[in-house]
Amino acid sequence: MNTTKSEQIKAGLRKSFQTGESAKASTVCYGYKVTSEGKLVAYPTEAIIVFHIFERFADGDSLGKIAASLARMKVKSPTGKELWTRETISKILSNEKYVGDVILGKTQVQNGVQVKMVDHTSQTVINGHHEAIISRELFDIVQQEKAHRSRLKSHSHVV
Image: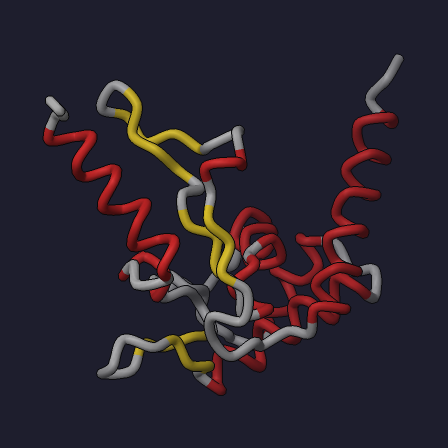
């Protein structure tokens, strides 16, 4: 069988995704640290902030209001800046890692450019991969609220 180097790499990545052995599964995000064994564990100082963000949004606060409250509290953003952006808050609220899950294969390189995958069938979901910061119930409430607000926003622009 004549396979290209690219196809071999993709096959290796797929195998590591399916077995949960991919280093990408332990990519760190705000609220977590990686142990010397390569495991994701909650970083308490940041995990409290992540929980605060989810709670505030579920209670009805806007992304801007949450960002402003974090700035007032002098909490540094994930990039270490004084100001939080709505986009940063939104990405945190959408990140499945906070319930302990990992989705591998969310992006793919096409023609030398990394693109977000629309076809989710090639993705691998690993539930319970690491310690959760947010309950699945709170995460689901926030996802429903985000969808609801998005629908309201899109309908408010209709003329």
